Each structure stands twice: as structure tokens, then as C-alpha cells.
Image 1: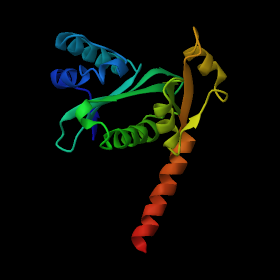
Image 2: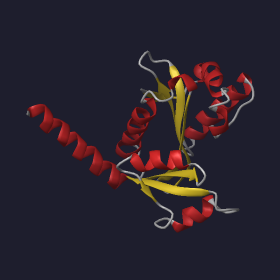
Image 3: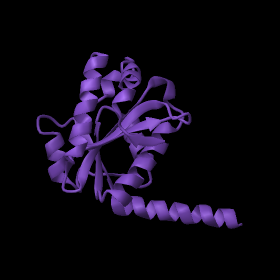
Image 4: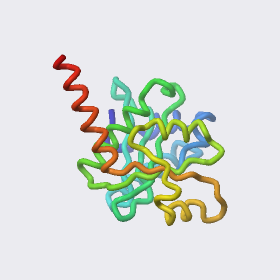
Length: 183
């Protein structure tokens, strides 16, 4: 489902990212395949320096279909950014990728909090974030982060996923599945 980024997948990911329904929502935009290759190389180098964590999202045939990233890492926190190619929207890949990524971040890499900034004008994404049982609105609980993301104008709402929230949900769900299988 997820793998470390690789320069060889850049042309395919660039084609998916270039779709007009995807491109506006990609954090690091590239306007050519060569530019995307260069951005991917920079991403790999930044991950080596511990500045971000980036993974490629794969479909069931191990083909790259998007990326999921933790940017602006500071003090065991960071900001989530993810995108999927248009043919893969609405098929459950995003949720599966997020859960796999969160497991890696919280259980293997000692991340404590994952932030998401969502435009106040985007109620669909806000609703989707709040459907995650381990996600909460964080405008008031992290006022310094909220002020930082809205330094020029109040454009974004802040959402947070803490390690404690995720771990509680993870083990509660895992135990519930085990009990259902035993019945």
C-alpha cells in the first residue's frame, strides 16, 4: 500500500498529478516531468535530513497512484498532505493510505501529533476529517499553530490527530475485530 519514494516512479506520478482536478490540491506543484523528477529528488534529500516523511501510495498491483507526506516537521509534529490520481478517487485508497501512514508515524517514527490545515471554505474536506474517529478540530487546543497557519488571513481551520487518540482507536478497533472473529 505504501513505499518509500523512488525517482523511477516520477513520470507516472507526474501524469497523475497533472490532472486539472488534482493539480490545484498538490502542495509541491511541477509543470513538467523533469521538474517533478527534480522535486522528487529534493523530497528524498529532505527526508534524509529529517525534514519530512514522504511515501508513495500504491494500488493492489503495486502501481504508484499518489503520495502521502508529513511536511514542516518540528518537535515530533508535522502537517499531512496527500493526493491521489483522479482515477483512484472515491475507491478507499486515501483512507487505507492514511491509516498505514499513521501506523508508521506513530508506532515506528515517534511522531506525536499530525496536523491538517483545511480551508474554511472547504466544508467537504472538513467533514471528511471529522469522520476520522481519531481526528479533532484544533483551532483552540493549538492556538500557536492556528495563528502560524493563518499568519496573513484566517483562511484555514486546524485539525489534529494525536498519537494517544490514534493508538486508542487502533487498539479498540483491533480488539473489536478480534471479538467479532471469535463469535
